[in-house]
Image 1 (cartoon, rainbow, N blue to C red):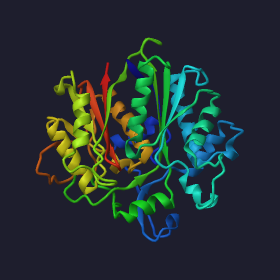
Image 2 (tube, rainbow, N blue to C red):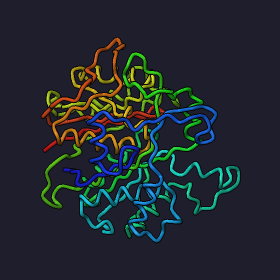
Image 3 (cartoon, rainbow, N blue to C red):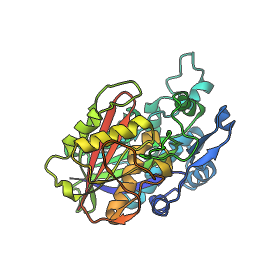
Length: 383
């Protein structure tokens, strides 16, 4: 049995899980408008950005001697792990602790300063393995860290890796940290797809017109049952299914997502599912695909929400951040609303959560999808 023993979120809404969850419960979005010229871009955009000054101040308070050699992404990951362990209270240097880094872009924005068309130094900060090693070295952990970079499902895929390693008994604890920061490269890439909304996104709404991007670092510390007496939220199943439909567009029928749902739903009472936290990017094809997958899996009556209008799409951090917020909701018997939803417009009907409600059911499902036709589903239980 794989239990959550500690967690933390660093985002535009705060630097603790409690700050972030409180903002979500109160309907506060961390998304803001950025004018032309931000990130040296020719178009305005909406995004949620981490407060760099607060990040540097809180990191400095840790009295880190390596601060000058670390990027903002690495500082945020380290601070998030440190804060999560305030709750878990484990020895992060122990050989039975595995670190797993989830990120889609890492420090790729540094390519411009490194020189895009010349060979990179093996120690260049653009390499994901190097960032992972710097994070583990900070905590004096000598195990080889795992890097998961699989488009937008990275945060869910990393949790599945953690679950498998713990179930096999290879480790007693797994530290899953998802982190991504925005840059001109990332934002302009989504702008080239015409995928960004100039307003706060509207997941599953008839008038949805694109996504918003966000920054976050979010950490979950998992423990293998038997290490100590545990009670709370546990990760009980996870599945990845790749439909390889298109390099950037999802399967219109939601085939991969549907098959992942099928896998995790085995041997559970569907009537005990409190909610589905969908990927819910507010792009036309993603939301329609998820509706199809949910209906095909027989879950059309289960309440569905998206957190993208609170945080934006935080890329490699989305799977960890949104799992943490959903775990907190399950712990507190809450069903959170899908913010900015007003009007439904799909042929298939699903149950979009339009207000915060009470729910004391046992399970929630986390869905993610990404470029290349990748799809992941996680199933959590409250014990």
